[in-house]
Amino acid sequence: MSATGLTLGVSGWRLQNERTGIGRYLLSIVERFSPELAAQRFADINVYSPQPLAASRVHLPPHVNNKVLRSRLPMVPWENLRLGPSATDDVVLYPSFSRPFFARRATVVTTHDATMRIVPEMFTRRDRIVYDRLYGWSARAATLVLTTSEAAKRDIVREWDVDPAKIRVTPLAAAECFHPLPADDDRGRLRHEMFGDDAPFFMFVGKISGRRNVPELLRAFARFKLGGHPHKLVVVGPTYAVEAVKVLAVAGGVASDIVTRSFVSDDVLNRIYNCADAFIMPSVYENGSLPVFEAQATGTPVISVATEGTDEITGGEALLIPRLEVGALVEAMTRIATDESLRRDLSRRGLQNSRRYSWVRCAAETLAVCGEAAAMSHG
Image (cartoon, rainbow, N blue to C red):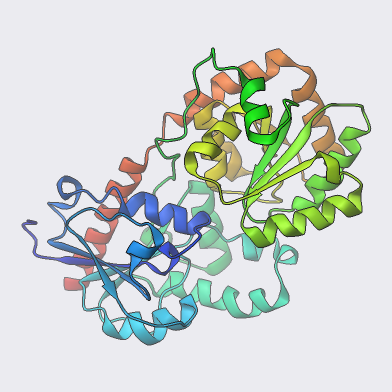
């Protein structure tokens, strides 16, 4: 039992069903809110959701409660109409850029980046109209703001005019299930077991919309294949995303060399990382991508665009290209495909960098920030 008697609420809408980036981030910290970690901060932790989380295979620590506020509303209306008016916790953590307009007590908002302001052309007009103002207001209105890198903090301050004194940086990490496989495991055999072919491959994990410009990656891969390389491209993501990739692959003439998988288990994903020549993040701007952390934790080389954020989270231990364009991607893929010593070097350096991060650290720092916000509210 906490000596403070305070309670923490968490918006758990993103924990339902298939979980992409923010849902995986939230699950990773909530699962590590152990009694020992929370003991000096909060007497109770309540994770709110529209439906019982057990149905989504979420296993909360024994002292973390799931409180159901039933609704079929999308996340933002649910947080505004159900969670905000209902939660009486001393502080509520909102993990997905926004908080409700009405909140009874302190709020902590995780604002992962300000990419919507930096590269608006990569987002739909509707998203810019609806979410740009909401995200900026939420960061300014929150008691405290969490973000994932110092680069992201600078962007949020500059783009949304948020007081830097209220922003706390808590880096992400790779889950413990992402790790190098034994060196004597036959990668060719594993590739054949997973995909029916032992050809080498590059990989991408995530959505295909917004700043993560998968169409540009497919165009680069098509040109790369003209060099006679045996590689395939493996794309793992939400069902709608991999279906769109299949259409793009047909249009680009590389359908036979694209392998897609909708949501795989972490164990399978770990094997895919381990068997890839490299993970490619084709993002025009990136500050804190979970797959980048996961790739480095498995010893998989990373190809990404050079930004302040990617340099920070990778420790510079990646093959960083100056900008997202077909020619630069083709050159990077060709270097990885033809230079085994480069692959080994990037693998070693990336793995070493990944050891700087952990979800236990992120969870502990998140609880500390939430405790700080509650104390500020009580004044």
